Image (cartoon, rainbow, N blue to C red):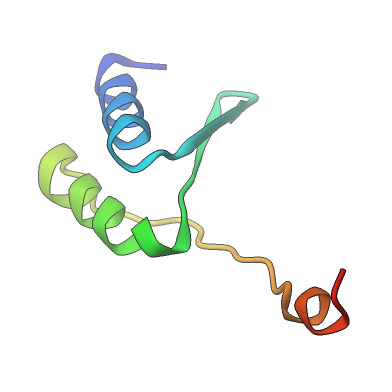
Length: 68
């Protein structure tokens, strides 16, 4: 991980409680749904990131409805 990426990962994980996952050189930050907008704004404004590759989600509404 280069120095700029390390700074962004450390900053976002510390500030927004993001879980950091790294696999085969790819870094993933898992952020609470309530923190997504602020984390993305920080990445753009403070760390000059301007390209978002993936945003994913898990629909757990069925689990809540069934009471699991």
